[in-house]
Length: 429
Image (cartoon, helix red, strand yellow):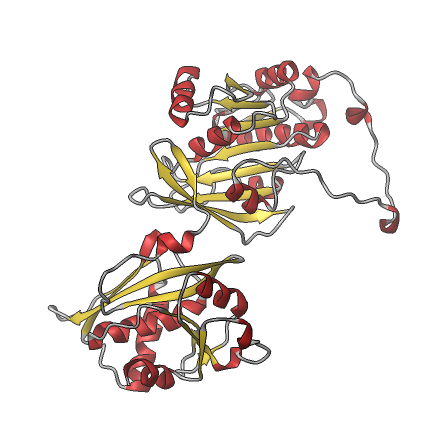
């Protein structure tokens, strides 16, 4: 489809045509030597949502643009409306191009936060009209739901097209930077999980957040993919309830199932998600194959890495797993990429094959190499501290993690292991 684009020289940003002439819009930047630049810590807008603050690096930075992506129905609009309603001291303008005012009001009543909120609702998709209303309301925070529904009069193409998404984002970015107003925009994603629209969209904004989760599970994960004002490895966890999203302050407790008696094939791993320590449950099931080709199925774990670990067990230690079905599951719907979970996966696999339950109060943190050695992992102190806080009695780690580790300050038994053979002897005799 052809797109007619107005020449750049004659285009004027939509919001400037409605905003009064100010010093901010007339300023001319000059080069300055770096040691003469005065730096002051930005005054962030703290929200009541501690998980959201954590992912952003300490709150919303004035003048920043935050892009939130996620699958349809995962809860992006609920998260943004809940955030807008939870800031009574901050004037917020919530702009929706997808829902009517009545629909938003109905959702706000379900969230039970609309009575004290200082939140204005605008159902509009034209950026020209949006900037006129922004000039009237003068909000401190602007929320756009979603960027794919907006259209600018500067571009003669349909809303949601590449040029429209790029131009609308550029206009909002100029507005955010020159008025020091933070803008939060919701973006749709494609089938492969990337944010719809041009890739330059993610380069234009300051922060990119990914809202993830299985709609069959109640837990949602807000992950920082890019952040110019904080760590890009942070993570927030929510629980979807009838009255909205609830923060999960201690996710380790929800990732661990409660059982009255020990079961074989279950091990607990001390992992890091970004910079946050988590205790998660690894479940394995090894059974005789009923068909000619054994199955290898992993949920929440890399299938290729599972195949590698199975090959190590068979080649180095003689466990005959090639004719058996192997199923692996990470409890809670979490997807794990931390290699420190290898040790827990190995322990769960052997526990299931031998049908011997593991001790319920021990956890594992170690990477497994191709020769069967247990390799050191990073930030072992955080993993040990998290295990101790949750009441575990012991933790199996790599022997090479012990150097420089002060074991006396922990009230948990630290079990250093050099190879998988040492692990098997300690667990199964």
